[in-house]
Length: 223
Image (tube, rainbow, N blue to C red; front, top):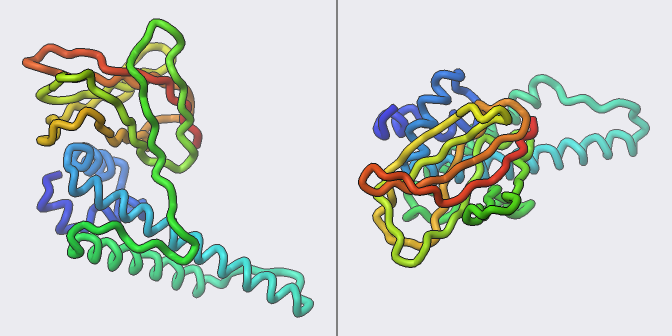
């Protein structure tokens, strides 16, 4: 999937709302993990969706409490309300993301319940001791892996590899290094296609086709 197609079909919104088939999701992930603009769109859409969902759940809880206070014994959402909530969620995500795109990429406004968190982990440089372990919560499609470069260290591109408990490669991708010469970088790593379990994430920098391992970590993926 190229960038023009991703924007045309509103891929970021559809990805967050889980409207893609497994093949479409993998195709878009291959694109947006190398596209800073689409990665930002996905992050913004995920925040908007999470905030909106939280607001809807709070309203449902209030309605249930009101019904109980009037002597009711059971609370159920009608199908009409469910459909309305779903449409409102899609509308908020679409409008909010469009505003984020047009507003000089300013962060999206938080819903009344406040900001939501984007899971990001600092992955230390490889050592001979035990490597650090991180837990990826159920429902997360990706996470941010932060890592530092040594002073003066530069690479043409970066790559990651995810290994299962048996050492087999379950995912691997490579992308061009960002233009800015930052010493601290954060890489968005997709995990939606991985089954629950423990994995090892290996991050490498590549300079003139020579890979150099930067860091690694153990991942525990929940579902």
